[in-house]
Amino acid sequence: MKAIQLISPVDGSVYAERMPLSREAAIAAAARAKAAQKAWAARPLAERIALVKAGVAKLIEKKDVLVDELAWQMGRPTRFGGEFGGVNDRTNYMSEIAEATLAPHVIEDSEKFRRYLAREAVGVVFIVAPWNYPYLTTINTLAPALIAGNTVILKHASQTLLVGERLAEAFHAAGIPEDVFQNVVLDHATTEHLIGARAFNFVNFTGSVAGGVAMEKAAAGTFTGLGLELGGKDPGYVRADADLDAAVDTLMDGAMYNAGQCCCGIERIYVHESLYDAFVEKAVAWVKGLTLGNPFDAASTLGPMANKRFAAVVRSQIAEAIAAGAKPLIDPALFPADDGGAYLAPQILVDVNHSMRVMMEESFGPVVGIMKVKDDAEAIALMNDSPYGLTASIWTQSPDVAAEIGAQIETGTIFMNRADYLDPALCWTGCKDTGRGNSLSYLGFHSVTRPKSYHLKKVTK
Image (cartoon, rainbow, N blue to C red):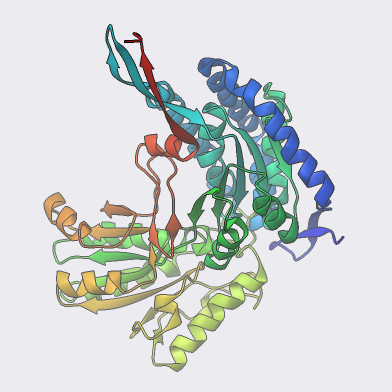
């Protein structure tokens, strides 16, 4: 069996390596989770909530160390401080709505009948987490799953091997039993075997479309519930009545933050013809203000991509687009830290169209294409001309217009005058190749519970 290595994008060194569990050890871990679930679910809801919140508090106590670890693992500049405010906020929100969401819905309680709908934990929840926001994406499912009475097995991405360990350490230190929340290192074959063997009652996967296909194939015929978030090609649309400066600032930040490695990052922008030239000019100036460099340098606003192979995909998309007629507006020489590997200069492309991969396939890097449109109808058609559907960002002065346009866009979330943001009170979901399922909001609890009907007749005649 081969060790799984974490290659740091900072300097190309092996930052960590772990041996994956054998198939036998993995089966045993899943069995322990199943055996522990009933007792965990039997604990009072308030106790489970308190333990989960205590686990998050223990994690945040080490945030300074964890921010540095994240930089080594996936390259985010330390100046941005990690993800821990969001982890805390999402946990608190899901805790606040747990009692009302999980409470029985009473249909009748009369002299003759008691009828109600309850929600019951599904059992063992398996989280396969990504590297780009490794704590936030995990907590989206981890917190509601544990609160609802499930046990959880977490498999983190190889690029962020240490994140799962840190979460497990914190939650165990807070008093959550080790068999209730387990972090494991698995290879693909063992992962697929466990899913196919019905070791889990629900699988939450965040990653590529190909990874989601593999999950569905592994689960075929098992009737295991799946939640799949498989990426996006999220558009921004700047209408003629938009606040131009605000649109540039937010959309370009949405395109470039975290080196463009955000599930809901902005990857394509459509601008009304009356604002197009001004938007492009301001967008170029905005990007030229970035500093690409070592993530531990306080001046760096853009770090390396998480792996040089991810950067290679973006470079190839850019090169193909330019060869097909696209015009690059950023001279890579302005970013001398670009080393041809993980460190990649940001890029803005114009004269692009939907025949180009950079406008159709997920880039997940610091590049964005900008197109001119004549009206809402053209923008809507272009926004929908995508295999993905995660978020869309509309820039206008009118909430009514934003809602009208939003109703016509095939996506999971509509933003007006903001982008690249998760609101824990709203459902995080998608359509088309972005996948299926829900996290956050009260619907996030529905994903990790199942309905159970009680029809209790109080009389026998």
